[in-house]
Length: 76
Image 1 (cartoon, rainbow, N blue to C red):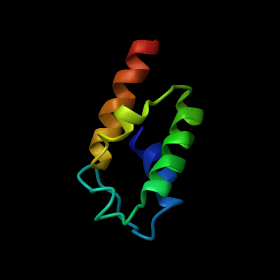
Image 2: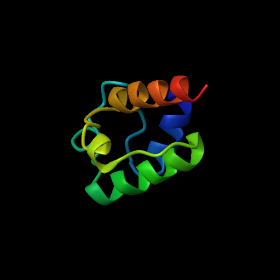
Image 3: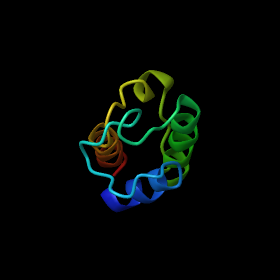
Image 4: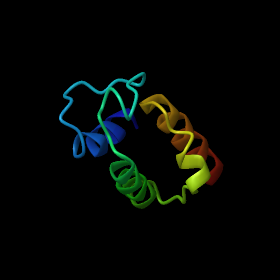
């Protein structure tokens, strides 16, 4: 799953090394518009819905991974 998340994020950032502890806004230099587009891609790829409230909790890549893992385990 980390690789899928990295692939999506890499479309929006110039940073070549994306780690779970990478902060979305400062380390990856992502804007709120980037984050909205990224969340849309996650929703499509993982067949889930992410609320705006949940999206606001995404500070680092690890937060996204944790959220996706919970969503996927609930849907199985």
